[in-house]
Length: 247
Image (cartoon, rainbow, N blue to C red; front, side, top):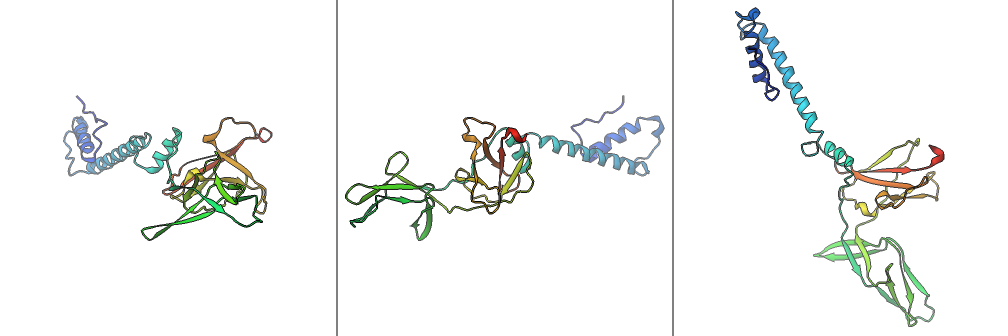
């Protein structure tokens, strides 16, 4: 009965041994010395080829499933297909009750704290910078006291640790799918603002909204979504704009 090579036994020595057993059962090779003949070199080549093909197939199959994948790029690609968005770093948050008293008779009607106004704190001799993510306005109560309110008219003003950064990409020809890599692992993806300018010197821009916040998508909608970058320490952003006339 001929010896078969089991697919689960693909190490070099096992493959070569089973090849020898097969040839020894053939009448044409009954008197061969497989250890000292030129046929041994041929068996080495066949065994190595089978061994490497088995490893390649095993690696490729493992990388096709998220629970067995070893490469980060494979895991990222598989997770993207499942709609998974990885969590980024999150900025520390502090809530402030802020008010200003102006006793001058020529005081303004209201005072506004613009976006990115900085506040500094120190803990154990380490300084931290916090910034506002939106503008806050305080109105004179009649006696010169200005209390800053949030969007729900509460007195809690939220500030977030960190410094806002700007990353600019110059885009060439428009394609259906444009992906831009931001090589910054410390980014807080919940704070991203995407603005697209028609030219490098233009002051007009289109604001793209994160697609996770989409309620309705129309032909002229502009969206962006982010996912984990396939490169270490990076995030990727893709921008799409639906326009019936351009399709």
